[in-house]
Length: 369
Image 1 (cartoon, rainbow, N blue to C red):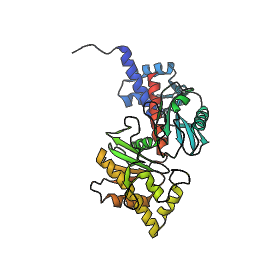
Image 2: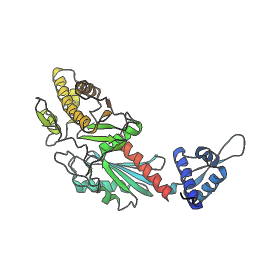
Image 3: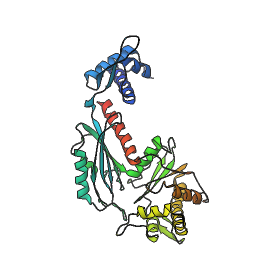
């Protein structure tokens, strides 16, 4: 067994990391508060704060403690620590946010797209939104309403995908202005992460998140991690065979064609038309809801068989609708292997999940500096 002691440089580095993480979690702290939170001695914390201030990572906010005893100075992160860019690419447009290491949104920008935007227009729009972010962007996280190749970050054009931007390459576009890491993933995967971090699946290590909107998607969370598959296409459920309206087997996407619930000239689901069936209280609406529920239950049964989740989360514009949730829950309870089915709860979950990861990446860069 080696008796070598850690070097002074290593000890200082570890202390500095503890100090930075404490400040990142609380926003501003005095040296006494940092010492109390970290369990590190006050003299050691004072030395660390001095080093980090000289390095331009911490700043004295000018605020002082009040009350009895010696006043203490509050320290926070320097604005020079930079920000992270969070982008969401959907059929409705590109949304960009700049966030700091505290998770605060510093700026927000949106540019309109449409379902048939094409790669070139989508690329120009993404670059335009990124250019609007304030200076000092050090990393980026992108949420895309399309499948994503996990090796390259390029979007993947699968058959019947309603949002047509081809093999858009967000990494190449954003790397022109951002030197740090750029991570791209599917919006449903980010939504699942958000629900696990602070939503209906908080603390659940094994669940599936099924997105039901204009498009269809599923995220598989196993042992606390989103499983993306060999190429990043895990959870692409549009062509999974399930029960059609007349009881015959159909790919899931074709169920909506059979029910007349597609937009004209597109494979996109007509959410407005579908919503009317969810809100109505007549025999035809009940028939459509039952047909949809049986088709979705086929997807859930496949997920239970293949990945053994503890919970199924339904999200998207119509997936979490009370009428839809009720009939799916009723139908799924009759299946051989049933699990609880709940509605997603996090607003803008794809942005929330991407934003949380962007903050983690930015914090890691600050600590690494």
